[in-house]
Length: 190
Image 1 (cartoon, rainbow, N blue to C red):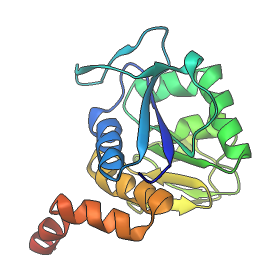
Image 2 (image 1 turned 90 degrees about the vertical axis):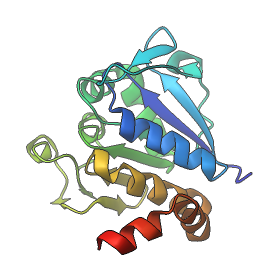
Image 3 (image 1 turned 180 degrees about the vertical axis):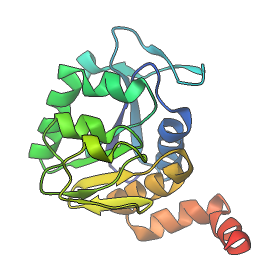
Image 4 (image 1 turned 60 degrees about the vertical axis):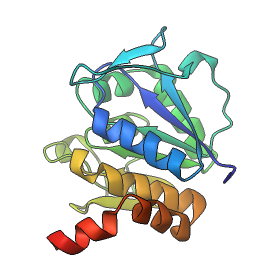
């Protein structure tokens, strides 16, 4: 085991590909991942009506995580942004210099937490006017210190691989990508 622990936050209306790609890929890298419901119940429903049962509720967790991940999707990203408990958790993780990651629309939660000012980042197209990044990029994944952001559903695998790289090293990220045949796909479409 890598010894790292990641909290992925789930609200109703989450983007399934973004959330579950991260959970799946990180677990393949032997990183412990807790799926955390921000609701008072463990069951959440994605933006495409896929239901799942989380491991824990936000009210039940400790602060012992190396990273927190906010998936996008609507209205999921708005629920994350509008939760005082989520914002407090994200701020504490940032203050502890842990990895804070958001994809698609979810950087609006980072904005609410006050983490975008002075940073370089990205989001789903059309959300840039709601974000105060000093530099907004259209790259697939952007890392600025402990902050990692990504564009959207099709970029979820690269977002997950960046998290693995940061938490467990490039060799582990490459090993996971190879096992999923990502280099083969990239070779044939590029």
